[in-house]
Length: 389
Image 1 (cartoon, helix red, strand yellow):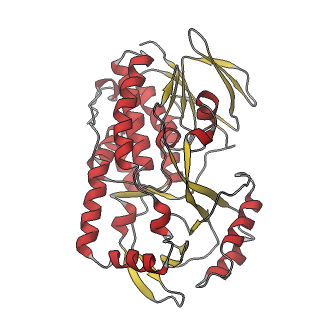
Image 2 (cartoon, one colour):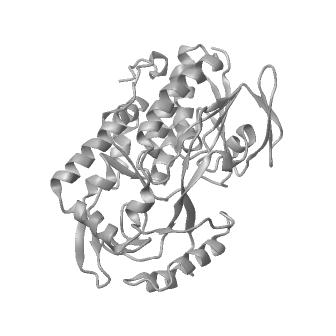
Image 3 (cartoon, rainbow, N blue to C red):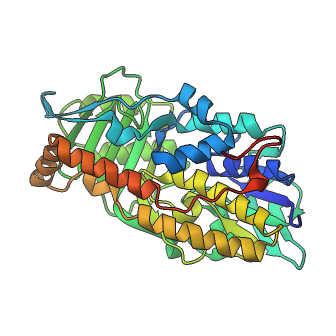
């Protein structure tokens, strides 16, 4: 197979998932990650339906993912006095399997660190395509040339910016922000709303989880203290336990604030550069991000194998399959659902959780969306002596 030296930017889920498949194909893979080390912890992610579970099984990690799963737990919706208004079933937020993003990243790293090269604490600064490859420069490391470059570096993808253009051309802000923090509280899963704002403790996403409506905020995504100040300002005057949470936030070691946005792209590839996961079809908190990432990695590697490394043919087929899948699963918008804009909308959302029939219909719909892709069996991706199934 030609085009066997591959650079992947991003060491969260999509990047190492692709590295696993490419390693089976005999490719020489390098994964570069801006963070100084593997990012542990983080929010919970989930997988839904037979398609996602089949890919995990073909990867050979399904049993271990099940062992490390957090298990979807029910979450109460409460009023300002802590009285229960509704219950969000664990099956609604946790899919078939729920696992911390950091635990999943660690598992995939364990399975790939001997078969590929990981470079932490570095980032790509330029991409120059030549006749036979892509010349890449880095912030710290020496320049290198690769046959192919894959951007698996999230919704704010550096590779997308370098290869396709500014983020503003592809990432659409939906009018909400979310934040994750560990505030040192051991609290049963509970969620509280006021119009345009949500605060949750002990839930499926993080020890403390916030969603709020806002215009665009100008801030440094790597400045934790600035993010804390923005979050405190956004939650001034809110009831329930929020004043205590904001007081604890000042001393929190970790906080993450980001927009709820959708990535919209007509094409995921440009020459020898291709995008994978949230970089290509992200939908923040949309419920399918990790599933799209592992399915996308499976399809991209499989199409490269079927095309004998012909990236033009493989990328075109990957785009066709994943564009259709991402379009179906990317219609939802989490912001208005988690932080409804009015008391009436909050009441209507809570009412939905009290209607078991309606919940069952919604769960069936999400499972149908998760399965809405043709999952081919790529023989070249099978482990030595085994089937992909």
